[in-house]
Length: 208
Image (cartoon, rainbow, N blue to C red):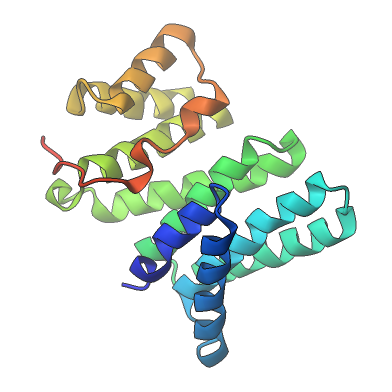
């Protein structure tokens, strides 16, 4: 799988490890030179460009920031157009858009949030018939993304459905605790949206 070549590097890079990000970007760049329409290379490379655009914005370079923002989102959207049923494309775009939308003004962030939630919803619909394929981590993050994203969009009933699944199917886990907090407070803080575990260790298999 292509994501195995770059995923850990990109996660490290987006956590501040610039060398890892540069290495990941180099891998996707080389892939795209020979295969310009490689969906997974497009979505990961676009995600890197999208991430770096925020740096430009923070430094006050609005023009470069917007150019990189548009390039990054265009690459990710193109990837989904090319492979609309590829989980390895839907999840990277969905997670990137949902995370980024938290720090954006409503007008700019809501369209990204809607796309991100749509990506997660599609990924769930494609795989829900066989839960044995999921690790605890992957199912927890997928359900949480759908729950929290819908809550942020105002789709309370859909959010409640997935927060309830987290409580019932993943008791005693960090995802169940997030669900408890949502039911108690009616909302979650931005910090609650962070990935649990950040793909370290070997997650347990999902148990019904």
